[in-house]
Length: 97
Image 1 (spheres, one colour):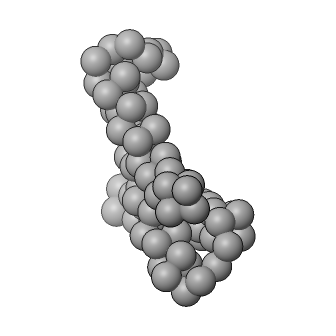
Image 2: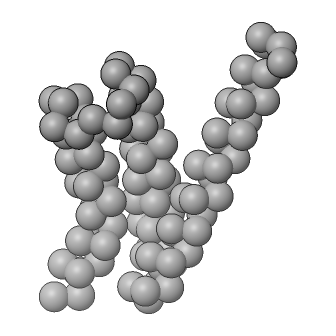
């Protein structure tokens, strides 16, 4: 039971991100941006992948379920925010303001 709960906590964000991506690509979710709606999938998948790998490392280190999920979520959020800021700065430097 413990392993099943841990696997669910690790894989749930990946499954939800994949479901979100499918819904956007199939047109079931529309955010008014046309083809730019696909850009919403990238941060969700990035966050989910970072969360999964961070959670797996913390699980291997022996952290508890709640603590590992909270730390993995925080790390994933931080890295995703840093990645988007880095992309913004890169685009700003390449194209100019």
